[in-house]
Image (tube, rainbow, N blue to C red; front, side, top):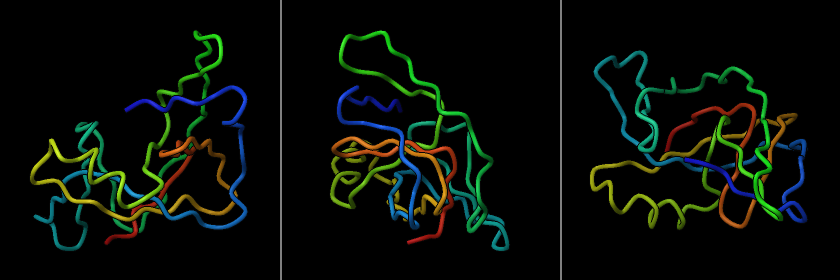
Length: 123
């Protein structure tokens, strides 16, 4: 998954409060004490419930005239209705709630966020 933003509208922000967001993926509950969430778009990575992810540096790729991309970061959907349409190709995928914690650096566009940290809080 890649975040695309407008150089005019998608500015770097710092979360003034926790931001609710959503990710599409699969829950591995084999270990009841530490269930894992694997994102549908990046299967080599997993999240542990209620654990804050390590902070990443959000680097903008400015190859385009009015747009930029951010590849490395925690990508998420802004609205519950959007991931459903994005996840329709993954018939067994779950839509799970995440939090971009207060104080995190993030960018947003019309449908998505990319942040430097995130936490899986469950459904």
